[in-house]
Length: 468
Image (tube, rainbow, N blue to C red):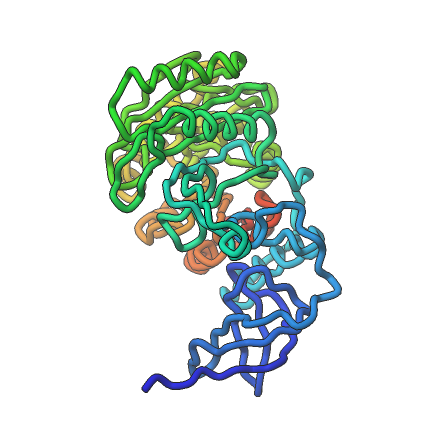
């Protein structure tokens, strides 16, 4: 017989925890609350689902009384859609929590010594700040409890976002507050067109259908890119769809498509087809133009990326005689952004298409002191590479969430560059790497940056200086 789960009839939520969770305390033990949309100060009824020696995990059965700090969410999809989970939290509280999250990872858990911990840089825009969104077609839409109770005639097709933890269920979106116009209008066009065409929305269980996915990219230059994934290789249907789209939106800069007949929506291994316009859009930053292709990575908050890069460049203190390595360079945005300060910049990235874009970005901006290489970082960054390219005076590293491989960290210890600027989207893995690097480096400055308002995600920049 299953053990009856413990119920706590009333308890106050005390604070936030990592990854957007909240915490309470009961009988001297910390309880991590995994239910979303909870705020410090809420009075809740809890069910303990997991109990460990030093902590428990619980879900909220009922919110008994709202926190005085709660605010009204601005989006009608809040609480169901998987994005913008902190809309019910005032922005100043979000910033405070993100800064505390970085402090906890680096100081309390990482036990690192830090010179100056700077206040978090807020995002000027807290709505319509993203330059990229992806929407999914599904023939199995998510219905709210109210919809189920109010209506027996269900339209099962949907174009929107996947519901958290349900790969097959998609929530139809009315208005999304993440991306500026014409994003919402484009999504509505394809939703209407797909329904009127008679071609099926994608079935994520049977892996069949026609309309599969839309990606919309916008830029501060006014450029807009639309990329559609079709699951059927029918050029007639595809050209009819995209032709009608261009008639409705003649100012779209770049229209592209993939034919995706795989069992997932990833497109990095697929060949893009350019239907109209250039196969890229351009972003502008401090007079530099950056080409963003269909597969290119670019920071999704353009305005805040500029602030991030400026602070990175400031921490790097690059002189005209310095050789700079930009590790995990992506499309070379940081490398090209700092190039005018340096003697040479060497960028390394494992995605070959990104390196092609990085080289193009140098070329279109007339930058001739950069070199870019594609391959696995731990394989490329070796003694032979250093001898050929020259030992770096400054290293900028911006790895993925998993952080740097230990072989890469060990190589940085061996190189002994005079400064390292470590940009991270995960303070936990950053703290792990900094612990190793602190053997020969001082961490003189830490700067959190909010790139994603209304989420728990936070970027962080750490400046390391070689010990005397």
